[in-house]
Figure 1 (cartoon, each protein chain N blue to C red):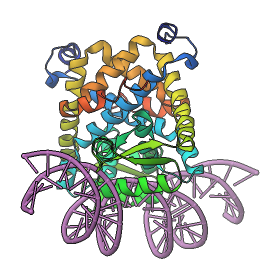
Figure 2 (figure 1 turned 180 degrees about the vertical axis):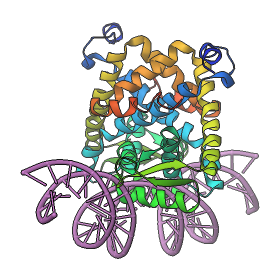
Figure 3 (figure 1 turned 180 degrees about the horizontal axis):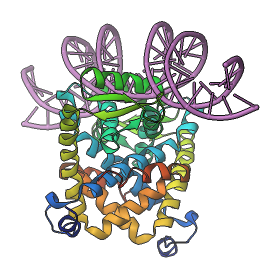
Length: 170
Length: 170
DNA sequence: CAAGATACGTCAACATGACTGACGTATCTC
DNA sequence: GAGATACGTCAGTCATGTTGACGTATCTTG
């Protein structure tokens, strides 16, 4: 199996010829890389009595201030009941605040309070430390490869949503 | 801000100079890439009445037949009580079988049954489809970048464990 | 060989974060 | 004015993790 499949991974080759080993390596690195990165902020979250679900909401609200509940639901791909609980807790504890939509008053626009922004910034700082050090040790060329492969893992139908997060508030 | 920070990402530069935007892009792609990849097998798992936890166990047992319970615990980084429930279900439903350790009879060696191997192969096939197509569309150079960055996300103390998964049964 | 460490199992209670299903209200659109 | 939409909420359930305590078989070491 070795020779044929080893050469078959070049761009354009049929996916069917990819070596099992290379795929397993990707699965494992993705699993460990992702879990270890998220582990980095668990302690900080725990001291605030919050969980990962709260962080995800906080993160996207920080990323797109004025986000609606519906938009956040699409990003998180969970039910409104699940999200409702998380948002209620974040609001009760004054990490976020809401305002009625301007164009459509049925909508609820989500923003971070100063307290929420402080927390998100601290969590982001810790994620940045980890990710920056991985970027630096791998080099810029590796970073763009990293991005390209991950983009390819996102189904076509979701890509616009993900790409739209970028660049509109930085 | 653009020029200085854009050049500061080269290997060896201080992580402090990384642009926030590049870090957020990595966080988001990692989140969406990872969740969408795992989504790929949820339907198949559901038809078997199994969850993600079962798949993770199945995966590592397939990867390293004869793995001990203790080794699997380290890989999964969960408590023995949590793992115990998962392994019991997998064993009851004849996806795995166990044998006493050869050198140390306190250990329990884990293997897939034929039924378990069939299921793991089918799940792997679906993951491979997704990952292969991402690899192919990104190109081989991107794939090694992808690997390098992810390796950098894994703490030094865990790296040996992850690397040791490779190459000993393929 | 006895004492202690180790590998594994198990009982019980609980937390988190997801789910389904049903129903309510305000607001927008046609 | 009728229907669709955005959001909220009550209630019950499930999957997967946690802590703490305790039991047994087996290995290791003084």
